Image (cartoon, rainbow, N blue to C red; front, side, top):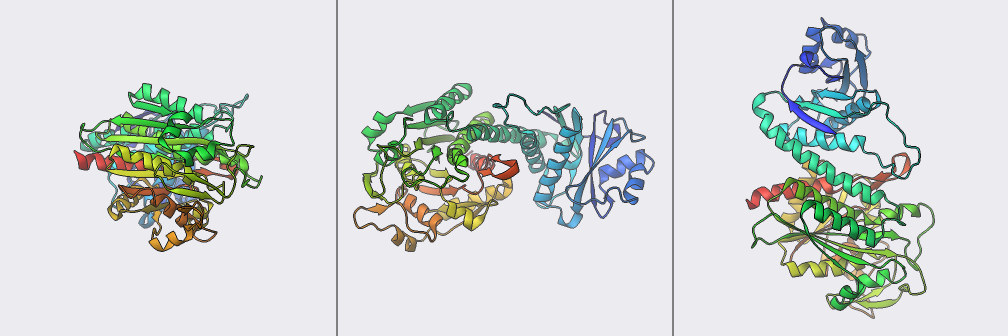
Length: 498
């Protein structure tokens, strides 16, 4: 989609559709008032009759509004003015874009970006508008022989600012929003692919192509290279599959040569059957999404390269398929990790932590400033937080606060969970240094505690995205989260480093 920014009056816009807001109950925004004045109270008459109350999420499309130069006017309900905040703004943009896309408006001029939101400036409004617009029109239909065609799909959006002196900041934020949206779309495209196509080798090929396109350095380790490094926890997960594992390492070198990198590690289980500890068959098709952590960190480095962020960023993706088979790991097996710690595998369906622990150990060789791993790790996190917030664990409180703040700003929120040593007791094994599961209770915490054993050399955070990485039901598909959270964190870190 093509985006642009301008400053102007709504009645003077030559556009297929001008979008303005209405607050509840029946209160016109400034842009709507200007249109109403030009139309000789046409809008206020409609509102007064009750055709548009201003309830959040409602829309009303008007044709041939007198006194205007546009073909249509779209009224969007914003809810109560005193309650208008981040969520309400995002929902209004989403409703507007969806309606424009479905009603044949080839382009639209959106005045909703002028709306005042507490503690949010024009840059935030523009960035979010670009992300939401791309997200709303996203489709994954490449495997359909007959695609659902939109009659006249939305191709161009113009966002409006109050004052001309805001244009420069708005343009920069718009470019950032487009990059974030591209990173999210890349992540969603990978995650939505079926497991018979998106194998570890396919992930490596996709990363290789992205590295060429965005001038990133890349290294791909095969089974032999990982075995030589002692990554036997990671390799144990791949034993039952015919698909060979990969360790993908990408570098965006945007900072100074002596600047310590930030490392992102993404869980890349391209399909998770549970292995010998086989999952129930219901909804097992959704286990293609067990590589959403990998997809999100790949989408993040793509967007960081598009923005040319002035920092050094390394992405590590341990990729494997978890399948039952004659060579598969059995419950009770003991394997050694790259760190030298032995692990008793009590449940082969707790495989994500096995591939991550070796990747987190590998990350230490880059002398990182910070390491953040992203993983669809535990169903227990979904029980705790549902599908709204990502679970956040950290061994460094300043890092945790920065990620929480980034999530709030991106409207891609996380919630911090405890990482107390008391929970380490759950992981005791009579036969090895550590067990890979800690029992039913506090499952997301014991999983994070497992990872914490391999991250003592650096500041580290763990994002459990099991509840936020994809949606089930009628809107089934990957969400692209937490790409926005990670990129807002990286943008702020870039400003701090420079």
